[in-house]
Structures are given as structure tokens and as C-alpha cells.
Amino acid sequence: MNDEKTTILENLRKAIQTYDNNLALESAKKAVELGIDPLEALDVMTVAIREIGDAFGRGELWLPDLVGASDAMQSAVPILEEEIKRRGENREALGIVVVGTVFGDIHSIGKTMVSTLLTAAGFEVHDLGVNVHAKKFVDAIKEYNANILAMSALMTTTCVEQENVIKTLINEGIRDRVKIMVGGAAVTEEFAETIGADGYDSTAPGAVELAKKLIGAS
Amino acid sequence: MTSRERILNIINHKEADRVPVDLGGTATTTILAKPYYGLLKLLNIDKPVRIADAMQMWVYVDDEISDMFHTDVVALWPLYDFLGVRRDAGFKDWVTPTGTPVKISKDFNPKKQEDGSYIYEVGGYVYKLPSYGYYFDVVKPAYAWVETPEDVEKIDYPIMSDEEKAWLKKNAEKLRKESDKFIVTDIVGGWCDIAGPMLGNEKFYMDIIMNKPMIHALFRKLNDVWMARIDALVETVGDKIDAVIMYNDLGSNMGGLYKTETVREMVIPYIKEFYDHVNKVSNYHIIFHSCGSVYQYLPDLIDAGVRILNPVQVGTKNMEPEKLKKEFGKDLVFWGGAVDPQHVLAFKSSEEVSEQAKRHMEIFMKDGGFVFTQPHNIQSNVPPENVLALYETAVKYGKY
Image (tube, rainbow over all chains, first blue to last red; front, side, top):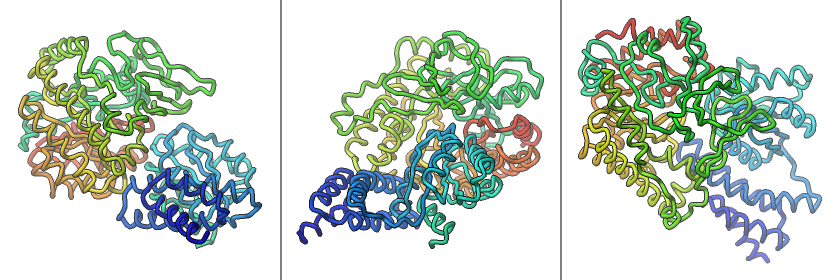
């Protein structure tokens, strides 16, 4: 068991490092079959993807690397999370984040990377996908009792929708329940301040550090 | 000095009577329906907004605007737009999801969804225009199934139909006869910009580092098509056009999307082969389009033959006008870069737009090598006053 366990955990790490979706998926399944603690398996991948994110932040790796590691991670996470749930275990989350690309915008790559890296960092993430209405953000914040809202917008024409979401949160009386972080190609620090967001970062790894900072976990 | 002579002068890094101007001459130097509608209203020009491309909803720029802004470039549009909509079908009335009344091709027949969005299906692709959106984006790429070089062989990529040739020939002759402007066509293609939507951008980002044999096979195939299209253009329109534009997005806000070595290995050889071919069989100039920060790739691109860069996305990392002109001004013509589109044109005052455009022009125009235009198409949230301020700056201060 120990040798086999070591191999499986090593393969999970390798799957992230080599962007191998199949290896990630198969290793996650084997980990469950073998009764390996899913939290331990998740931790191994978390460390690996954090290293990729850090290297991206330092300019040593590139977008394809981050997309690749992110994809591999996504192949394995649902299987391990299912097992965590089945065992009735709890992954102690740093915080609960609702993530989405705003209404009118259907770009997903950056948003999904932020989701993946936040998950990897230990946040409980609820990714609402793309083209998300303000009301849907509001409902999700209430439903999951989130303490962070992370919104993405790729275009100069859709980043204004982030402001609309914030206004909706104010109208619904839940603005103060969440820290709001915004990102996306068209968003800037200055814009984030103007619309009343709590934080902005230009990269997915940077978004993780920001999320930690916003909830006092860094 | 005619418009064409003006552009040829500055392409040869010589100063002209004034800085040449482009608005509406290419698919990446034009303006979307909403700000154009506002511009026509602002100037009291009583004309409908005619859509030239249904994917991004950019327009045919009217003569009144071209004359007012002294534009020097005109497009030879292909028969089909980027969404595969015919340009010869006549116009019908339509209102964009965000409320701009337009005239659009009768061949444009999207499926309206219950949530107010539109779906357009063509050639195996599915495109979606959200109910509060401005453009159609690919939501289902046609070639996501391509995994091997053998799969690439199964892709049927047309060169140029007889119908298209006849359309181009007729319109190129008309343009050359009726206009003294520099004529650009975008019938040919590109590299990353074409392969990305074909496979799905996320898959392409991965495959370019993880599935190199397939990407090489794809670029090989595409390059053969592009070169054959150049041959067809030479045969069909000859010297009735002046340039082609090639699409190859490599940059992001923060720098390149890919490692320099990846681009050098996977893309540059095909660019070089294409440029060598064009230079061998024609006198066409090539406008090389890549959004974002491309600074890190410029030495390799110049080695491959790139001489005209568009859209020169100032405001991204390492794309400051001073730096670009100083380091690459002898080798490159900057076709764009008049104003920062993400931080200034859309969001600042007309005075600030004008001020920045004047400063950028003064830097870029020295010794030729600059065509005044904004980086990429003017987006839907740009106030018409800012469009006016931008182009009036060229008219007012563009003299050599």
C-alpha cells in the first residue's frame, strides 16, 4: 500500500507538473480505490499547482503552462471532492468564494484559472460560469454564505457590469457581507477603486494572494 | 501627394506631407456600430449605420467621415465577413441587442434565444452574442476534435472560390479606379488567431506546448492555404491592391502569451516562409496584426520579415511609444498606437484623448513609419466625442 500510495501521489503531482489530464483523472480514481485520504491527495496537487502559479507570477512560466496545470487539476478535483463528501470529511476552507464572468461576457479562461488556483489554495469556490447576471451573484452569495465575490470581465465594454453587480449588492443590503475582487484584461486598479471593489490583481496567482489578504489569511 | 503615395512614403520610412490616417481600412482599424452611430449623430450626418462585419458589428465607414478625417486607407472586403455572412445580399433593418439601429446583410439570420441572446451556426462553429453583448464569440469551435497530424489532413480549408475571385476582381478594379487610397484586403488569414478559434483557444494554448506535431501540421496546412491565396490574389487582382493583413495574436496586457522560444519554434518559421513567398510573387505589403504586448517577440518577427506592425497596443507592458520607436523604429512601421484604447480612449475626457494622441503621434511620426489609428477597433463604450477628438488631432497636428 505504501509504495502504491507513494506512486499515486507522485503521479498526481506529476500530472499537474506535466499538464496531463488523463494521468490526473486516473490517479485520482486510483487514490479513491486504494483508500488514500482524499485531503492528502488534494494537498499534493495543491502544492504542485501553487508552484506553477508562483513560477507564472515570476515570469518563468507562461499562459499555456497555467492553463495546462489548471486543466489537469480540474480533471482530478471533482473525484477527490466527491470522496471527501462521501467520507463526511471537511476540508477546512480559508474562505468561501463566489466566482463568475459578468453578464454580457462569455470569456472563461482567466476566470477558470482563478477558480482553480483559489481551490488549490484552500478556498471553497463556487464557480457560476460566464455571462452571470447580477441577481445570480446575489443569490449565490446568500446561498453559500460567501465572504468573497470574484468577478471577471475581459472587455472594456463589460467591465462596467462589475459596477452594476456591486450596486445590486448594495441595493440588496449584502455589500458588506463580502469582500469584492475584480479582474480581467480590461480592468485596472484605478477602475476597481472607482466602482467600489475591495481589490484587483492582474494575474490569477495574484488573485489568490489578494483573496487571502482580503480575509486576513495571508 | 495622393493617399497611396503618402502611405508608400511612410512605409519606406520617409516623411510625407502629413501623417497618413486609417479609420475603416482594415478589420482591426475600424469602429463598432454603437460609437459610429453616436459619431454620425454628433456630426449631424443623417445616414444609417451599415454593418460590414456581423461578428464584431463593425461598420462601413462613410465617405463623409473618411473625408473629414482625411483617411488614406480603404478596404477590399472579401465576399464573406468573419461570421460567414455574405456582403452582396443587400441590407435589412436590425437593432443590436444594446439598442443601436443598423442596416445589416439580408444573409444575416441568427437564432434568437429565450434569454435574448443570439446564436449563429456556420461551418461547424457555434457563435453566441449575449443579450447584453456587443459581439459574437465562438462557443463551439469547429475543430476541437483535431488531435493528430492525420486529423489535420481531414480539415477541408478552401483556398478561394471562383465566386470570391470574381467579387474581389470586380471590387478591386472599382476601388483602384475610383480612389487614390492605399488598398488593403484581409482575405488571406494568419496563424495563432486562426488556429485558436479553430481548435478552441484553451486547447490551442495547451497544444502549442503539449501537442507540437499536430500544431506544426496545422500551421503547415494553413500556410499552404495562405500562400495559395496570395497566388490567387496575384492572379485575380494583381497590383490593384497594395497590402494584405495577417492575424497572429501573441500578446497579453502583461507581456507575451507564450515563451519567446515557443513562438520561435512553433510560429516564426511559418511567418518567414509566408513573407518570403509574398515577397517573391508580389509587391504586396503585409500588415502583421497581433494584439497585446509583443515587445519580446519583435526581434524574431523582424528577422522573419515583419515590417508593418498593427495594432501597436500601447498601454500594455513594454509597448511605450518612445521605447518602440527607439528600439524598432528603423525596422518597423507602426500602424496604430495613436492612443491607449483600454485606459484612455474609452474612459478619459476628449482633451486627454487628444493630448495623448498628439504626444504619441509626435514620437511615432519622425522619419515616417507611422499610420495614425487607434489600437484595434473602436469599442462600443467609447464616447463619440472621443472618436472625434482622436481623429481631429491627426488632422490638426499631423503635418510634417
